[in-house]
Length: 180
Image (cartoon, rainbow, N blue to C red; front, side):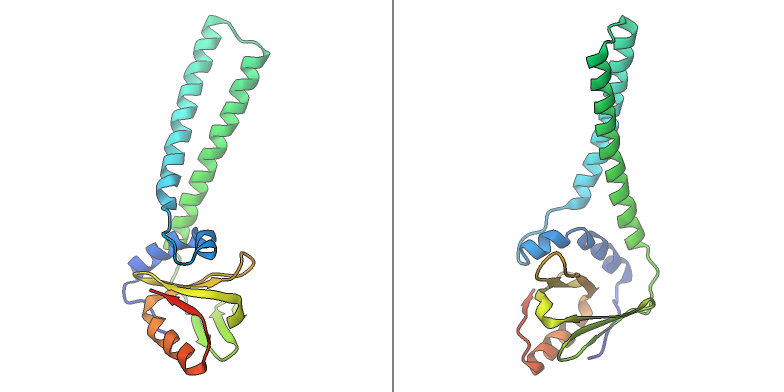
């Protein structure tokens, strides 16, 4: 099978970065509509900033009124930690998405044989057998090999390879759902 690179690298990388965080949704329901993870992350960042601002305002007004007691101190500490954790998680997801989107275009390849897929990267080769996949789903710029469970690995490749993969599957009698 001939492996093709993406014709629209920027759009492919952007879609791949979004799909990277939706592996669990794809494994659970390969045909289902995917929820936006990016919007929730932005909302989490805004919520964390607003929450920290309001907590700081509340803490300052409590200190001015000199009404600080142990329960108020514990409340402010727990609330600060909660909003800081939400903010850190949101920033971590946003930076991971950006790092995936901006990764260098390596000479990664995908080879198919009757046993499974061989993912060839600069770090080495990895063989994944066909019986580990439940479906292949095609998106606008990316196609995803979806594993049967969370222990498996989702493989994201340019959608230009869809025709080659489906032809290979038909030729060799390999039964995997292809969702378009």
